Length: 222
Image (cartoon, rainbow, N blue to C red; front, side, top):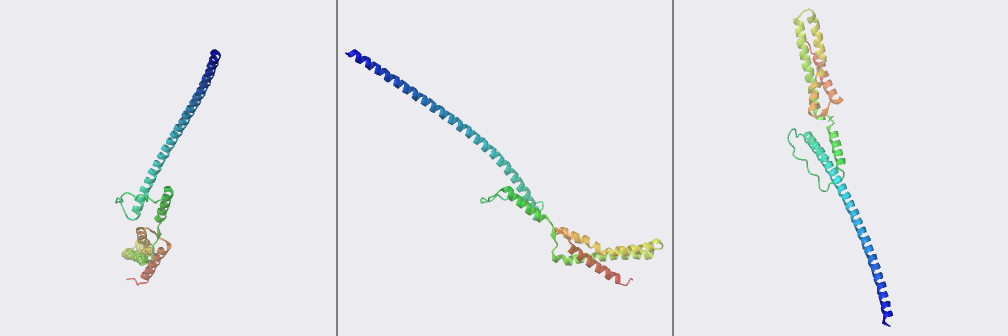
């Protein structure tokens, strides 16, 4: 009676063992699949991290190049501003550091500074308070031309022939150039003030010189 029971028990144990073996094989396959998935995910993560690091390095290099270009442009504009404000050849020191709360594209800001310097570089008009000085330039030019003409006339009276005829004519031409001679010192005044010699100061010089010349021509000759 014990033999059939033992056979059945042995067969049940075999089936149980087969079931356990199959389950272990399934769990082992599941573990291997999970491990491969984890390795693949780790490889993807490493690859993505490497790509991000490479991209960050490229962005950092580009940012450093942009910073160097901005710093160089800032140094040039700073020196130009120092020269514009009368710094001359003296060293103005380092440009001021950017404000911590500053926002915006530095290239756009530098373009604005460059445009502002370009507009301030353009010469302006001479102020009205230099009008008396301009008139003196016209008077001085007329007096100088009249004096040169007087010398030429005096030389003409002391000579004979062609010189006696040509020198008075030359004296008249030189005298009539008096209003124009005043524009030379007027131009120097405009250059020193970084201004343009517009029609207004030209008219002041010419009118003052012409008035002086006409007045001198009306005087009786000695």
